[in-house]
Length: 222
Image (cartoon, rainbow, N blue to C red):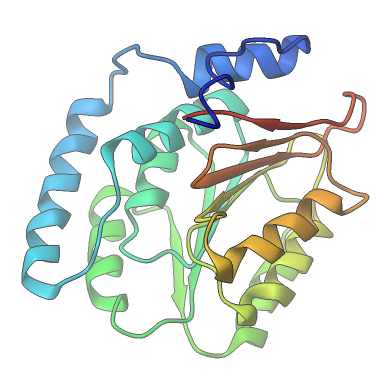
């Protein structure tokens, strides 16, 4: 109820922010890929029932698709890839270079199989060696979309590497910003001098880096 007045761009004067909120976050259009993506989610949900892993909501995944369509990145990077569903939704929206990084055991076999089937262009690396993951980011010229699907303290150096590669076209999508493990990191990202506009969607945070836009932190009741 506290967030109810932050709906559908009410009181937002920035054309960029208004368009993002109205035509991307709250968009109700049915996109061409939704049907295929729904089928893939059901496939992973079936596997989840057998292995006990959560897959997230349709609403959240469709937002990822729309954000990638809006941002038009040339490179999409996933940190804490998990099942790979987030990366697939981003990848179905936009042809790009894809890099999926994770350090958690238990996901690799299923995720690699899913990405090979539906996003074979993606490079997927799952290793507990954080320095190995840092090296992968270091090789990038710049980052387009960075999707922080899962956060742990071990990812802080990876996130800093990504921050060193941002441009005016970059977008960070941060999941679970309302949970204690991620909340402090999200607040620090917003305060970073390299950051621009941010959007708090309660569970998901969006961070843009175009310093030409007046810096503001928006709350959106999504």
